[in-house]
Length: 136
Image (tube, rainbow, N blue to C red; front, top):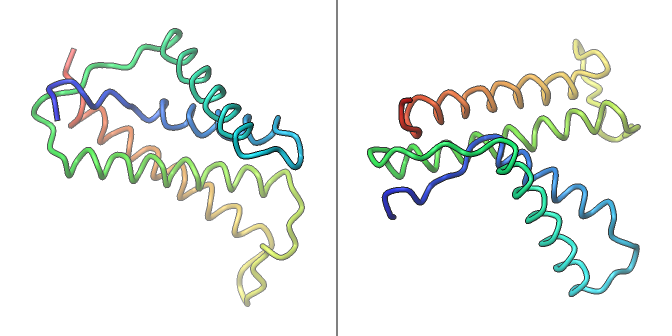
């Protein structure tokens, strides 16, 4: 990898995920595969371009290891998906997703998803700022 090739931060991952959700939301039912590819690519490019215009991504540190970069991506992607799933279950009715076990009140799955999602996102932000970015 080059010296400054890893210029992705946690907010980039969240914006990319939101771009995919927007793309899937605006696609018509029964769209052909080529239409799906074009719409998803356009939404991803537009969302990431707008994010980088408004909030530029800091340069990466050349001393960061491949393992720390992969851990950052794992925590960031998993935390984003968990947080989005918790938010979606908060607003959508999904009776099959409820856990009915002794001692588990209703809504526990939403709480577990949100807490673990925010924890993983916080961990990825700390890993990103402490080990992957240059100090100002």
